[in-house]
Length: 416
Ligand SMILES: Cc1cc2nc3c(=O)[nH]c(=O)nc-3n(C[C@H](O)[C@H](O)[C@H](O)COP(=O)(O)OP(=O)(O)OC[C@H]3O[C@@H](n4cnc5c(N)ncnc54)[C@H](O)[C@@H]3O)c2cc1C
Image (cartoon, rainbow, N blue to C red; front, side):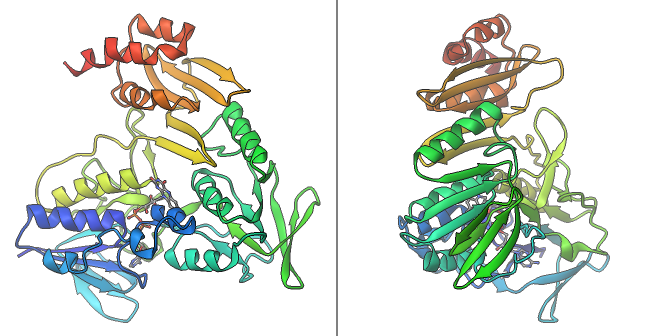
């Protein structure tokens, strides 16, 4: 009887365990997590902070006996070392655990930038349920809050903080908001929207010092501006949890390098989710695409392979839809542009609408948009499907709004 061990009980770990049980009914499955909570979803934390759900609403599975019923053994503990030769793990309590097949689904942790004062107890992250409890206790109506970082997750966090009624300032070191997902026009539009909603925004600025000021914190920016706040929320990005792999022989770059079967360089050791660096659709590059739908799909593919069923990842795909205080923006594929490629754009500053299409030859390979929610489905279909547009490319260059017509004419034909 095969023994499957999964390290990490977030969405990737849970979906892998359930997939394994479905296709490998007689195996032993152990799911290890190091947080003192039932398996939960981080992406539900904003809804918790906005008061739309309670803590149970973040749990990935709501039935009390769900995992027992599937004979999935839940174990709490931190894995500290991996011996791939002996196929054994070591845990922080000194115990060991043997496996036949292993999935590493340890996710990521928030980066702590090396700023004097960053270790103050009034500096919080928004990553775990424990973090959410600390935020709920401090970010209340009228509280002075500074958020450091306005990337994709940062903007999601900002929305949930803003809903709690604080006086909020956001500082982003990039020259615009969401700089790794949005171009200059879109980033500036999102900034203007946030300012209209009463959020103070500083872009192109860095926090250089955090110091106590009585009960408060004095936060100094690189241009000398000092802002007094009650709490600072640090949202400056995340890094894969790979430190425990030192000496294991598992190959890593930014994350754990995996092939299309989500297997690492070591037979029988797989990785999935925020910790994995998988092959990107279209470009063949390896990327850590730290979003939940990707984590779950990677986990499903990994689990099928662990159970001996051949399955390959179609390629991870950058597909981000962001709601920033009610303004919907999207970033797809190679939105930054490609060498020799062409672009078409349409801007309506007054109505907060923007659409920019990126072509490589006669294929649409990326897009940024704000407000055009009606086009999200077809944009995804055309980009992810790598649809050859033929004569529709020139029509889209002339009028980017003909996306639905282009999809109906070419997207469905591509399915045959
Ligand atoms: C506030 C917030 C909002 C988000 N919003 C969105 C969104 O709208 N859309 C979206 O797609 N994504 C969103 N995300 C990202 C999403 O939550 C992640 O992509 C997803 O959680 C990745 O799942 P995972 O299973 O790979 O990792 P995780 O969910 O991080 O789970 C990994 C688990 O492994 C545990 N672990 C780590 N190391 C060890 C170890 N050595 N031993 C044992 N256990 C270990 C961790 O503690 C954790 O419980 C959001 C994240 C946050 C924080």
